[in-house]
Image 1 (cartoon, rainbow, N blue to C red):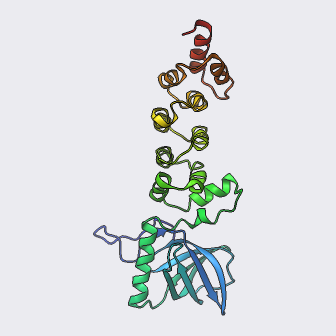
Image 2: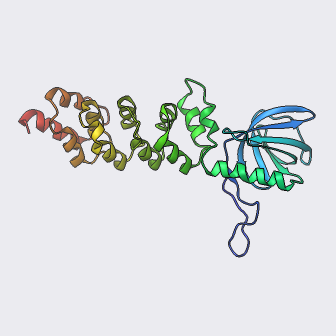
Length: 265
């Protein structure tokens, strides 16, 4: 029941209920009258893959499950049966006997996921989360959702998203109109930013006067030499000497800096 997997009809169209949507919403699994809080890994029109501290169950056992979106009061409560248990922390269950109202609620939940409203992994991160924890949480959100969030996210979202490694996510973050100087400096230090992201930051009028950012971009391991030269133009000798101390500085950019310092060019 892996995210994004599907069984196709001969005509190439996915069969009803086959598509799995990578989800990030909360759930409760009720077994023997006891609720067990968990999280949805992915969701389809026929079942759901849950993750968390789960009770001991057997294949075929009847259970009850409640899913709810992190935004609003949308909830689905349904009977289900255990389909498989990939490991001790994951459980795949299949819905049983959904009525029309439950099916409508399920469709609404899937729509919430597709609209990017299910970003619980970021909401659940504790203060001081490690980079590994942040990356694991980001990995539970689809790339389109992360791009959308990067383009409009609040300061907390932006703090997490600068740890992303996807080029389109980082470019969307670079273009976020609410970025502030400390955030853009941190983004410029990311080893994952591409030439495209470097160019976006270098050409953004908001940061033209920030000498520290210009040094960081000009000495990035991926910066093209012509762009580095443009960023270094007009910097003071003191700033150029700071640039020489940056780790990972390419030999070509180092040569350009030394020429500027020794020849005044």
